[in-house]
Image 1: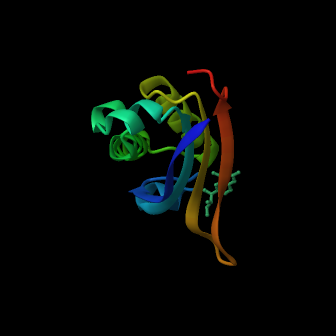
Image 2: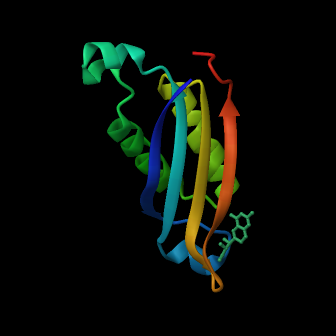
Length: 120
Ligand SMILES: Nc1nc2c(c(=O)[nH]1)N=C([C@H](O)[C@@H](O)CO)CN2
């Protein structure tokens, strides 16, 4: 399988379970591996045949900001569903972390895998 990846995609949004977190915006950092087939785009050289990572990043940012999620798990599940339904992606690994969520860690978060390798 081929992969398009996004590393350290940053989104500023309302996220968290505590009252004080509902009144501020925090920084989320996403890493994604998207299983897809790049051969058509490689042959044609056309963006129209490619999984456009800028479109994926924009869709994720808009979804996350609008969602105002409480748990990172809910957010990750929503993003995974969005990507698998909207784009030619058969499998993904998605990590999302909250910057400075803990005083003694730079980032804390969750990683999920969804979909079936090679299914699309
Ligand atoms: N597994 C999780 N643990 C925690 C989460 C979460 O989303 N998933 N969130 C919090 C709080 O919102 C925290 O980030 C506040 O600093 C705690 N644990």
